[in-house]
Image (cartoon, rainbow, N blue to C red):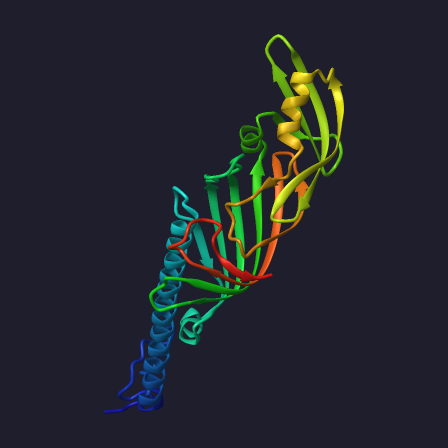
Length: 266
């Protein structure tokens, strides 16, 4: 029987007519390459998943330790940066960890001033195997103090002043009236916030109102509900509150101690 040259050319192979696409079965080498590629992708995806699990566990342990030490009602949120985290854990140090905590109470103080929001960035965070303590090579933090919390702590209504770095404090008494004073906000030694250059802006400074303002503003307010290893560097005012910025080096945090009892070298 007569067989065309085209038939001879594709004998034993798939061919689907003049307008069809010729399909060549993969060679053994190509099959091996496909298998290797799929295996590598599977290993990569699995490795990423395992690494993310390790990062989540490290974040959970850190959050638990800080919650125990700070006495917060809610567990702080923690993010572990860098990839792969498994290598960092194997080396015993996390490159960078960010922590955000809310409503840190300030008990056992004369004028308890809670921290409305605390954001902490830690470099070189080392943890023991039992997670009983955490040590960071360097730390930066910002404690946000809402005017509502400052007002509750000081006993006078505090709000943003008309100039940067200043706040207004309004003292009120029934049958006496109101008086509003403006004061400059600054960082004082011992992790305290000081109010200086206080001057009356509105109202008459009657003796009872002066007494209220003196109790609120005359002495610096301590921030005792942040790790002692942090040192207050600057204070700025915002529309909603006061930002207190801290730094620290070689900070050790132990969750089994009360808030404010942490060791460091500033």
